[in-house]
Amino acid sequence: VGADNYYLAYQLGLYAAAYLNYKGNVVEIRGLKGSTADIERNRGFSDALKQYPEIQIIDQEYCNFLRPNAREAMLEIIDRHKDVKIDLVFAMNDQMAMGVNDAYKNQNLFNRPFIVGVDALIGEGGGIEAINNGSIDASFIYPTGGDMVIEVAYKILNGIEYDRENILSTGVIDKSNVR
Image 1 (cartoon, helix red, strand yellow):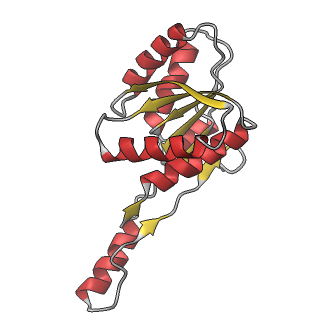
Image 2 (spheres, one colour):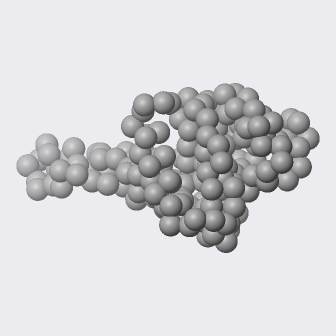
């Protein structure tokens, strides 16, 4: 039971492309180098954007899924691309997406790009709250699947036929549906 990181990021890439009207400059804030989530999310996102030659990933940094690392990395990216408009940032989790927002907010920088994360967790400090308060613009749901795990375990323990592979679906949360 689990989510498909490649599929999630591919869908996120299609969403990003549509938001950008199929042209623009993108930055990717990556997770932990070598981790499955980072590799699969990068591949899915890149594969989706390859269909749109006018969208360029102009920079990327590994930030270990940590908000302070993303803030610092984004400040460096902004400095490296002073003469380039960054249209969208894909951060591989909501905490890093919030770090990207911090970089713009703390430096009083204008022209903040559209910021998309992953997780869409509810509760204090989660992605849903960040979308509600404008810290990030969208997040793709990374389902925890607890209910599905219990259902599969129940079936196994009771000798009921079950699917050996259970892929959880994703969806986007943004201002249009955050409530």
